[in-house]
Image (tube, rainbow, N blue to C red; front, top):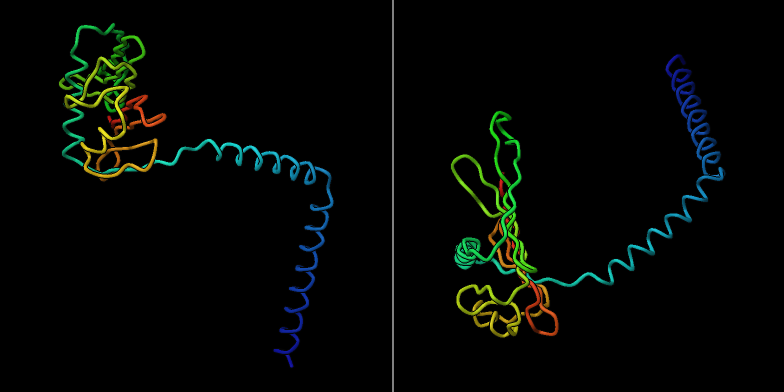
Length: 191
């Protein structure tokens, strides 16, 4: 009898607490701000749909050896004297007593960014938009997509080709427009 009474009392408390939660939900859903939120959500969904329309499909090619060659070529391009140099001091992330340097190399529409620490320097970003700079004697702004296909030895199905390593920590991005190379971007990793 005592067990039945405790069980019945427990069920009764559960029902009362469940009923209170439902009442709270009804009050929340009947309030005016929720209606305004739904309208804003619809606008957000519409803007996301518009954004998705302009996304260009990409094709990723994993090729460590070709990536290494392209990074080497980018380093050689950065050594050319055509560039204007801007230097910016930066506090080292790991040791605040050390000042590192951000270098920005600029020539016409081309920019190359590098990070220089005490004992090393690395390019971490580049945007090439001038046909004066060649990679591997054949890849430069204005080439046909077929030239890059021949170098990669695969068919390219997209206007946006990414070439990088397995971890995607270093990536060259080739952007084509009407099958002509428009830009070469580089995104590297520096800690």
